[in-house]
Image (cartoon, rainbow, N blue to C red):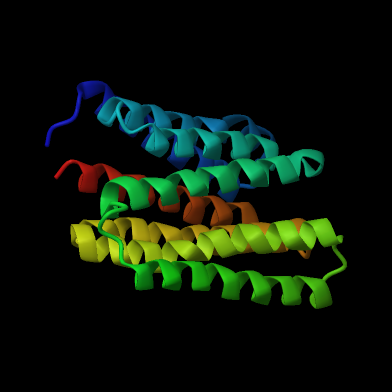
Length: 222
């Protein structure tokens, strides 16, 4: 399926913005990296709008990622950035259930595995955060919910692969990279930082976003 020319233009702008962002991150140029960061997901979201204007959950998820990118830059607004990312994840999850797999096609046992994965991850993260960190109870619960929702991607996208074929392996790979990126982000935000940590966060994060959205776009184009 061919997409409108503006979709390719903004995808190209995303690539340019992503490369610039990674250069700033690698050279640890925080001033310009922070100013340019929002452009990556903005361009990717606009590309998704032109590719599939009738699938708002895909590009809304990308735009929420852009909002999250801006808000997590400051400690005072970090929690609000996390909420934006969480809602974005829920958009991707709902899109998968609604358009990729189909509510009528998903089996009860598949729902059980997805919900069970969330529950197990939530309890595991809650116990780790509660006894291994000094965060408030609110932070512990919030972090546990966030990572549990992310881990739900794993069985969900596996079922999507079964439903739509290998193209959804792009989204599955993106989900794994998203988990890695956020694990590094949270560890450096609340723990000990290391050299060029922003480069590794942004590399895995940008790859995650483009792979997840690419999986959706290609699956929906069939």
